[in-house]
Amino acid sequence: RQARDAQERLLLWKCRKQAFGAVGRLSPSYCTQDGVVPRTKLPHILRRIGEISEAREQYETLVGNIPDVVYSMSADGSGKPLFISPKWTELTGYEVEDSPDVWFKPIHPDDRDATKTRCLEAIAEGKECSYEFRVIHKKTGDLRHVSNHGIPIRDSEGNLLRFDGLISDITERRLVEE
Image (tube, rainbow, N blue to C red; front, side):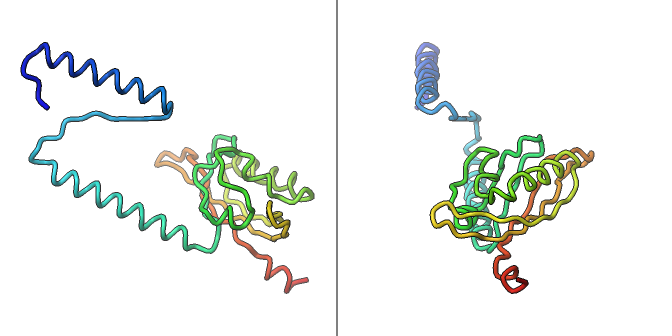
């Protein structure tokens, strides 16, 4: 709707601002961006939004079909997960949480300290890492042997941004070796 005069325009803006405040109280993490798109550009913008949405769906399908856990972890020393594929829950029984503990909760108690040390050392040193450990499935109690391989991701200036990696279930291989 287009305002008929300056007074109506101010009233419309006032209501709009109040509505956003109400939404913010309902959902504190709500984010919005406001912009003006010329009508002539709107079809292109809507097509592009559709393309981005389709690409995201393809990415999620691709990652969901990888038999390993795909992850991205903060390199700030907190161990905070930035992304963990759904295979994590399948492997460990733990839901993906926004907590560094999500990495360490399922690790077998005998492996936990050494694994945590290796992980944090790799972050501190910003170096590629590979190590094996055992996890216990939260619901079934099944013991699985896994291999983690993490790679540091840096920006164009060499600053460490994050660690990306794979956690592979190697239980069958370990059983054959034993």
